[in-house]
Image 1 (cartoon, rainbow, N blue to C red):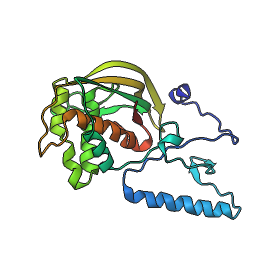
Image 2 (cartoon, one colour):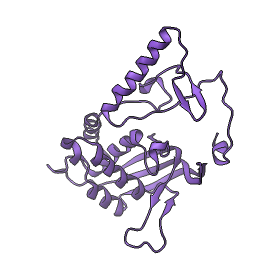
Image 3 (tube, one colour):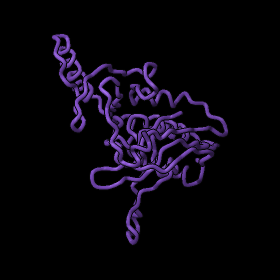
Image 4 (spheres, helix red, strand yellow):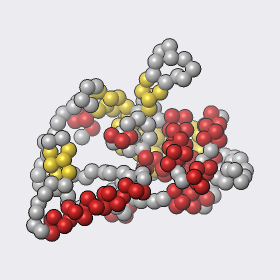
Length: 242
């Protein structure tokens, strides 16, 4: 499959096979729309109608199963809330060094540009350095979280911790990859990367109720739902905590 993506080879679909499609919803108000679509499709099937549920390109697909629970999938389905993520992060009791491993399952890259100098233009970074991942996730938390939980993540604290090399890469199994879009080949990488989160932690306060390493682990869980890097709405940057 990786070679087919890389070389832009169009693999034939087998009508006898089942193909999984992962759909992620970040906003709660979107779920009723999906639920309504599923119920209307189910009502049509109960009447004996075999209508296509989804069309991708020129291919039409029937719906065989919907998986929403983590225990019933290959590890790519789950549901949570911002409150649950925060409650989980609060319970963490961290040692001197904590290990964080991320799997980058689909093509991942980061659209980078030097804001102070545009001499050389932007580029797509091909390595999952901490400074490429977690400041962006912190911004996503700020944009998505309800107002009462927005302050659970402090972007400045996360960025300072990474700049001071509190978070370092300890191991990796990465490979360069590319996917051909309609008008260009998009380069990136896939694989896994392991990080060490090194203590000590700063004391918490009323304005910063979570320690910085708790915040980073919280953001790593958020990445499962929102992805990381470039063009996540197109399926790039699918990542999960191992």
